[in-house]
Image (cartoon, rainbow, N blue to C red; front, side, top):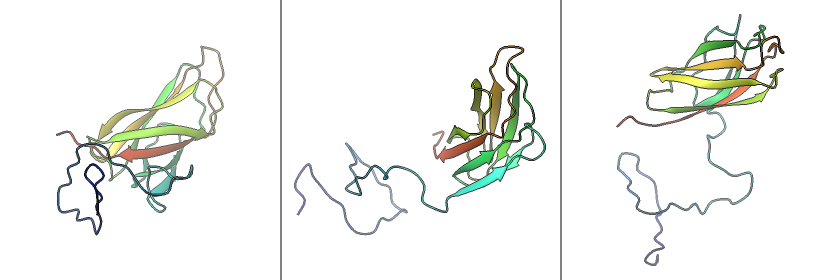
Length: 150
């Protein structure tokens, strides 16, 4: 029997009903360093950018990897491309992280726009003029955090 302040729920979750929580939600699940918040196996997808750094890609998943084209990107230059993704809505937050592949130590990849069905990434070579060109096929991890505008 749960005690006040330490209530426990059991049974099957019904997604057709609202759940309101006041206070903290504490997981009693696995407490290893391998556990965490994220998507289960099979939720992700991968895609490789085709002809150049501005070529759009399509990856319809909540998470996964995008490998950019390795066309040379000069110092102080940027290239943006659209990622078409049916899982993304305008109120969502898209996270992106460089996993590997960048040649220049001053290369950044950021989300610059989110819309219904797509998001836009910009690859920026922040090396000073005359510096190292970015020629790596950058592997990016991405994840969509579902949100709302209301």
